[in-house]
Length: 347
Ligand SMILES: [Zn+2]
Ligand SMILES: [Zn+2]
Image (cartoon, rainbow, N blue to C red; front, top):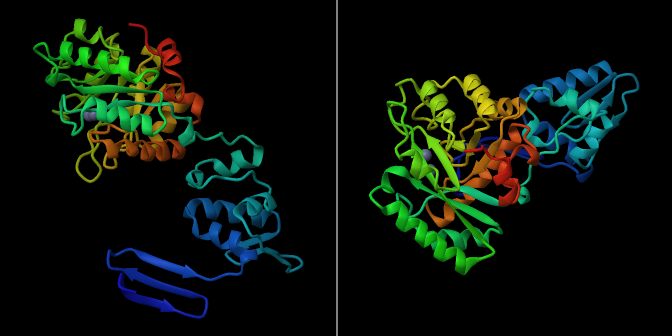
């Protein structure tokens, strides 16, 4: 095939190739009755499968891609689905996102796996940009795309520095007019206010106080006390949520934010933490989001969409949230806006 750069291995029931993009592909041909075994075997992670096999050995069983073999009798049981495989080994089904060797097998054994959040649980997006700052579509275009996705609400959160000198007032008027037209869909007035190098927010408190939803976010000077600046922003009663809390850009920068302290202060001040869906952010990362969820912090999953099509980035945030064991109860934007309003920080 055109996209194959190199054939590494070939046989009657398998092939291994390297694609033009450098990725390796394995093809296996198995009978349908053993599909569950082979799928589970090749669906990582290594740590998960090592744990699974060690557990099985204690029960006198040997697990491989071909089936589950009884060491005593030599009998091999194969299964058509992964669900059957986990059941056969005495576990509840472990969703692929949890197969990391981080406690999921014990939880599956004792029936205490979380009911993971699903895409359909999300009722709205609380982080959306428009042409009022660096977005590429108008508020109306973003709202129509959000309605198309089945949402009940969307918060417009343009950058604070672009809403000075009377522009915030004008944006609020536009949102009010659109809300009259698009009801029952609800556009919330919001902002993504930068936490400056000196720790102050880039909009004054009296402006922040007028808005439905306020993000505090680090965008600059990442080496200048990033943790202290975030903690300070959380102490501001008008800051509802910290956007992309560690400000990482995958492959570019990894600011040193003390996430344990951020999570503790988030719980203390009832400030939410964002799971940002931008592909090069995915921040909080999975282990941090799990830590936050376990500590009782409120999580918001959002797209940070700058164009209509990138509203779909929320799905990457959702996938990351599932890797973090999060349930819909732990995520604020699974609730109707009226209930978020009651649950959010009191300002
Ligand atoms: Zn941002
Ligand atoms: Zn943003």
